Image (cartoon, rainbow, N blue to C red):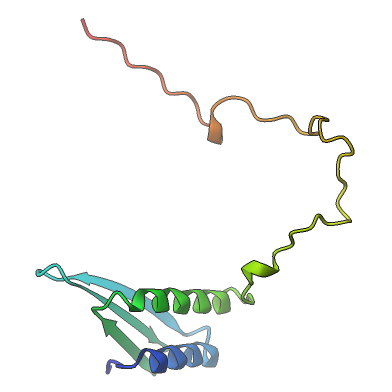
Length: 127
């Protein structure tokens, strides 16, 4: 198990390893806090024959780490990346819309505390 020093090399190798054997690949993330207050991020991906590791002390890699996690999770869920700008801003034509904006909604608003919980009782005052 040798640590890969280049982030780009690690990211490409990790994604290729997952695509090669998705059912056998495991991905592990560790955060180790040192006694001197400096943290170390360690990433490991393996398929029992190949093991790739990357470690860093720099916070610069956190955004890159986040992007790698997102990419791997989308592959694990078999989803394609979505663009925030492609979200439909216009109203869809096939969904029925109420004609009068002042008309009440068809479903009543839930009553009671938010989240459906029970109100907490106030404690009794001590004498």
